[in-house]
Image (tube, rainbow, N blue to C red; front, side):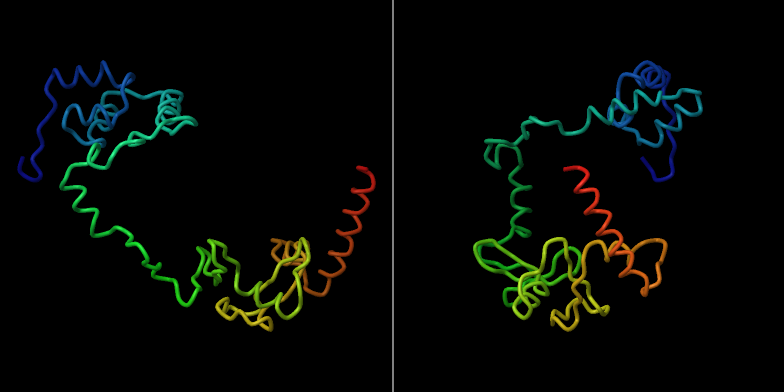
Amino acid sequence: MPKGYFKPFTEAQEEHIKNEYLNKPVKRLADELNASYGRIMRFLKNNGLEIPKEVIKQRKLDSRKKKGDIPFNKGKKQEEYMSLDAIERTKATRFKKGRLPHNYVNGEHKDKDGYVLKTLGEGKKTLKHRQEWEKRYGKIPDKHILKCKSENIDNCDPSNWELMSMIENMYRNSKHDYPKEIIPSLVLVKNIENQINSIENE
């Protein structure tokens, strides 16, 4: 069909849409009529046909993977669910045995947040700035974190990091923008409140 050419629905196609739009997802109707999703939606709108919200919600629920669902390719060989051409195309992007990730350098790479991860072997990793801190100052206490003093989180030297409690970090990041001078007092009050609550609960 030439670009820009519009072929209207036939009467039979229009009747099919009107009879089935509540029974079938719009995408399936579009596939059946070799039309676009948007075209079906425009037809419904122009004809005052609306899909109820509860129907849309149920269709979304039905389309989700459910606990216990078995993958379509479970227990099958690749050639049983892919064409030979498709299998050949996958070879170019396959991860080769022994190949390291592009961001892996001398046992280090970055996580999704940009922090440097150190490989420990046997599939174990740790944040490098935490490792360097504990080498110099000992184990980081429970409910404490390390906060970068600068914008450079690549600098894992302990001098670039500050140890603080999660409570202090909470106040520092609060939308109330507390003055730095009063944060220690707020932390102290919060710790006292937590101790009181702990005693009362016991």
